[in-house]
Length: 261
Image (tube, rainbow, N blue to C red; front, top):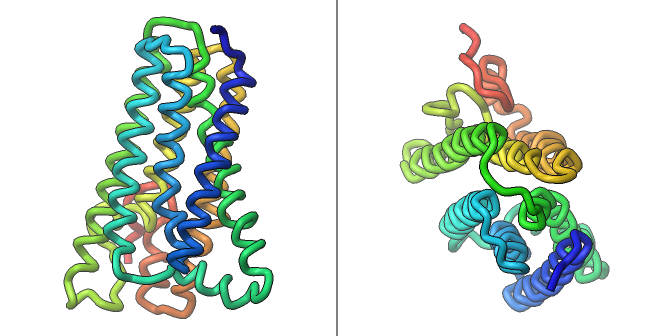
């Protein structure tokens, strides 16, 4: 049976809709919308495996992209699960729970779960393109994308590990993490995640209509820089003198050597 690209997209959309609805129900039972953060990585794995096995082409590029998404997703899920364990609902969701009042259930379903499902589909679009593609072999773009993905994985996983170790030390409570990778960028994990999706995009450029996949890394870059990442997180540190000094010397996103004092 031969599937079209539309079949890949619609099949993924249906799977994500069902998946996010189930996660919404779990969040209702637990009274904790933070579960959606753990569900984020699993959703990408779901799309990657679904599209990978849809026709069973199993070309090298298909295997590569699927493996990269599964590795990224599994690490992210494990990291967020360990980080959130025993902490209760994240401050963002708790605030919305208070602000939305009687509209909480409806707005949660659409503005948190369905919205994240839609974003997931858009960001995963290059994965669908690669799985649908008929091109064989490996190109320079595949190699470049893989190297960029590795760089991103190093920054995201390394940054998360360093921050978690920093927070485990009671003596660091209330202090700002500015060591290791955090010395070169205030958000190595966000930079790393963005770099990984730009890497997947480079791989997708080797296939038919691959250029259309640019919507994926552009979206994740905007989200992490301007919406749910850097901007939202740094609001917590307004007026914090240690953070303001750190921000003066260290770039918010792209890694670079810190400015001299």
